[in-house]
Image (tube, rainbow, N blue to C red; front, side, top):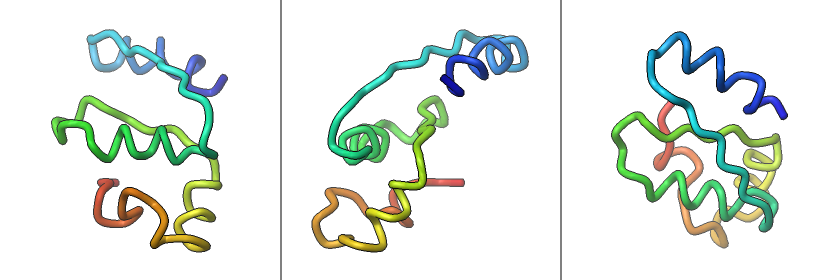
Length: 73
């Protein structure tokens, strides 16, 4: 819901369309993996819950990405 609220405002600010793609399942792991593997061109954003940090702290070895190295601020 937050992403859909922000998308039109970001689109206006950036002058480019912002597409919100909902992906469910895996407690955010599938979504984070998709973003981690995306081309690092600055055109892919991840809006995710605190589960991202919790999962990285509790089970870092089982994640297909590095929560610190594979994402930029």
